[in-house]
Amino acid sequence: MAGDTSVSRNCREFMARLEEVAARCGRNSAEITVVAVSKTRPLSDIKAAVAAGMSLFGESKVQEAQNKFAGAVRDYRLHMIGHLQTNKVKAAVDLFDMIESVDSLKLARAIDDEAARQEKIISILLEVNCSREPQKYGLQPEETERIAAEVMKFKSVRLNGLMTVAPFVDTESIIRASFVELRGLFDSIRAGHPEATDFSQISMGMTDDWEIAVAEGTTMIRIGRALFGER
Figure 1: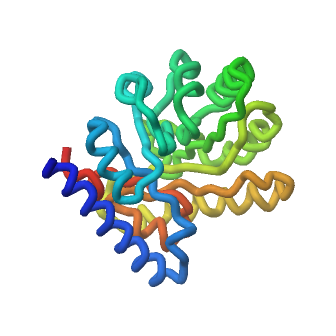
Figure 2: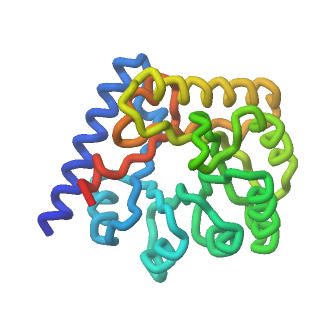
């Protein structure tokens, strides 16, 4: 069980670090939700993380998550954080508590239709390609406000906010710029839709850049390696 012990220790140490960084930024760490990225990790690691206080896990592939959690009794929540194909929507709506990676109006509509069939309301985030990298999934920043307004009209989807993945570079100013842009889009959408009280989440920041994200206002960080170690 040595691996489990290291995961628990990593989780506790990370949460202590988050508290320090948040305080330095004038924030309360309780405002920031940690999504423990558990893709490729066994259930034993997830149980160790739960024992250390983690209550939310992120998976990137529907099939892997189905196999891993089939029949498992869960006292934690699951988020879909990877690219979702429309042919996997039914399974995703059934399994996940939130889909963070909604990267098109077509996908949002498919999720809404499926959630209606399953007679449930599902929370989603719109993924925005703030770095404008052609190989990345996500809405273009310029179309995000229009699409958000459309999605807010759906009956079985609850739009909770926005998500982005920063560019994989070492230049802090470039990473920070993508986070600043997402925060600006979030603020603009919220100001334009004061009735949308569920629109409250900004998911940005991962193991290598989460401290920058905390400084720029993230409410949700997706952390894998810092909790579970190298794959």
